[in-house]
Amino acid sequence: MRELRTVLVMVPPLLAGLVRRVVAARFEQADAHFTIVAETSDLNDFAGLLRAIDTDVVIIGAAGVASKLVEASIPVHARVLTLSSNLNQVLGPGPADVAPFTPDTLAQRLLNIQRET
Image (cartoon, rainbow, N blue to C red; front, side, top):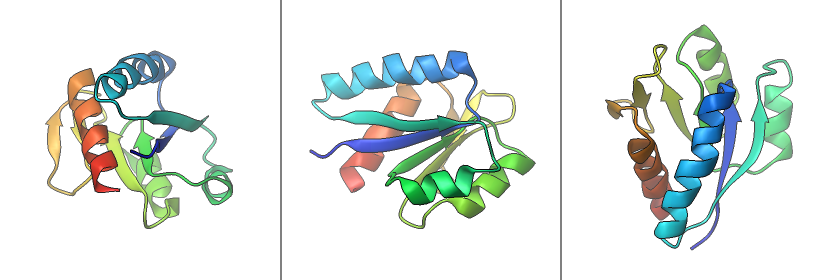
């Protein structure tokens, strides 16, 4: 199974650490591969960053105006997961995909995306 290449955008440090540890552990348990290829909060260079790397998934730290700007720069083939503005829901990858945000929910969404790629 190929590696799921992920970019974190505007993800708070505590949450980024959770993604690194918990999601990576869930992937290891599933004999799957997950890598964070970039992390950024700099929206001025975001489009350039995405052009420079090949990513499968972009996780956006919180829904809002900035997340809409980020989504407009994401390559067509990349899937997007966004956290709600109060960080209690994970949105995506489809428009109707909304679930309570837990480490297990996030890991399962990412595993499902990997199986689809």
